[in-house]
Length: 541
Image (cartoon, rainbow, N blue to C red; front, top):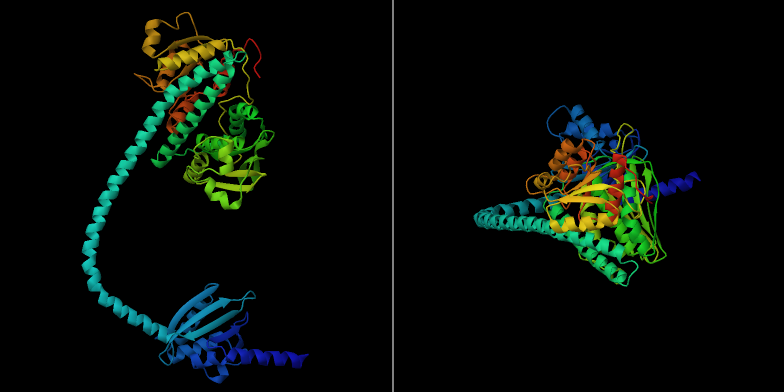
């Protein structure tokens, strides 16, 4: 057996001697285990330094005494060389050899703590690099001549880019303003349509009303997408992370998308959770809205959409899982592209293909991680990872009740303020149909001159943000001063900026975004009514 091992070792040494590079292997104590002939020749080592068990430090000391490491104390230079070779898992270095040739060293640490060294003569390559450097020097004059021209061209390009950036910024601002203005009449149309749908349920006009509602929903989705994209592109997003109870996000999803899921014959399942995360409530809510909306749209009737949360270490994973059409791995990037829709999905639902593009932009802007897993024909899972809140971080109270509400009869006195007369008329029609005593005005001056609240105390107020002479927030403060500081209020606005939402939350004011969805409005009113201590004529939900 020993003879066989000796023969194998001799064969290995002979094979190593035929390798053009010098190779040496050292054990964990940095003593030579094996080296080939080229190693000793390239380093010009005496035979006694190439025998097994020779210390690496002795080899470096010999080379240092010979002057290969330059001037200085040989022992210190040898120790520094050993430390350099051991400094990292792998090293690459060059130095002049004893014969004036350029040597290149490659080292690698072994799992047992040992070390391998390979070296080769790269003199020819170094000379070629020097020759190339000389050629480059000869080109400096030509480069210098071109520099002035390039500088001039770059200056012109910079000016052109500045103009393009300014034009793009103007476009983005225009798009944001146009989207905001378009949301105003769209909000009135949605309110009128909601009233029409309820009144036409038992007539032949019900189907027509539903078709109008579907068309307005499509327009709203497009406007909301354009508004989101303009805010992202203009850099207007200012994330405001704070502790948020995940159940508040999921409750809002259940309230908003429950009717949509039932209409499409899809089962929407929201799993309760006590988890709290640190996130921007509005922006993360927007991500969830787009994911759930997509899941419902592309899940056939009889399918299911599951929304829930799981703890993963220090993070909370929000899952939106559906049993829809799914897609293969080759299409993963395609689904996040703007205006891109898969053929089968385009046949199932209308849209521009902006939902997941906005999701991707928001995820990037917030620095979050979105995970995707999908099987074509079996469904998809979108998972958003959020930081879990610490035990000492407490979330604010939710804006909405913890369950979806149905459309029972209300018995509430509601004051509506909006600078658009059509919106007020539509809001009055919807709220009156719900059994509310409604009074409306376009401004505080109109409330004061019309003596709307004399002898009539509202249970709650629905206030637009952009009024003619003041902001909706200041108007609510004025009303609270005159009616009572306890007056519950909701800001009903097309302004979706985080700043407005933050200011409202500081004053204990709920926010309902335009175009107003009846379910979201009903949920907000129910929550405000509970604050005022009022009850309804008939149960809700």
